[in-house]
Image (cartoon, rainbow, N blue to C red; front, side, top):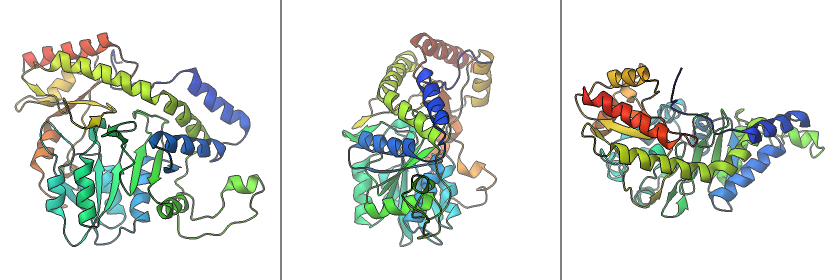
Length: 378
């Protein structure tokens, strides 16, 4: 259907072989591949990092709030410009989501000054999202959380492999939550990682992942345990061996894949920087080595975004929106959420163009030419 898709998997025979090897092994539930994936991911983040592989990024976020004891009447500050999972998990634990605005039309990440303005005596935690693979201002955010004794959760769904001042995103907060959904830089279909900065939180995460049990099925299978205790109420947020095996292969490819994404983003910027009907955010963004998860642009006021999306579709080019504002959803329309004018305006005008590591320079130019052609008549 599409000449140029929004996203394509960066898969080859290595992923096929990894899954085949798991199936042939006869052990497909969480086991040695999962342990290996967790170990390699921790090493990638910077050494002694405690990682727990889970079934999704949303599972990791839910576990983070539970592990930190966030509950009824607590307030959690979250970015207004993010995927609905962040507000959903806050509501699911009975807490109150408090929206913080984006910094500017050039920097769409959460504004540290907004975080500080939204703090009350009920605030218990802050969730930050490294939007599009560009790190938040972690120095300022960490200092605010330290000063007010708040827990800090990093949602790193967009930013696996991104760095802030040479340090990996996902290694700053009390807990970090990664997503390995199909369209992510590290893709296993469904999956995620819960990353804890303390042994206590790591232990809580592992209990939450698997029913609060002290021994896993693998332990009993290998004769290391006969039965088990249940230490606390838990969930089934386990990953399986096929997806862990995919994760190991994808992690090996990640650095080169992110580098290639950067080459494509540079080409997009060269092709579109002179177009007067859009703004490209995060250009010359400081203190950051990006992961280049998506390529978003901001259309000028008065440009009909739906018409642009349909015109690109007529050219065989897929595009998307990251993200609709929460107050557009039925579940949150009557919630009385905080006013966040910059993020809300971005939500109305944002357009995401195709980006994936196997995309070619010529395909980037085709997308840019098609967008320029559409905007000329708008």
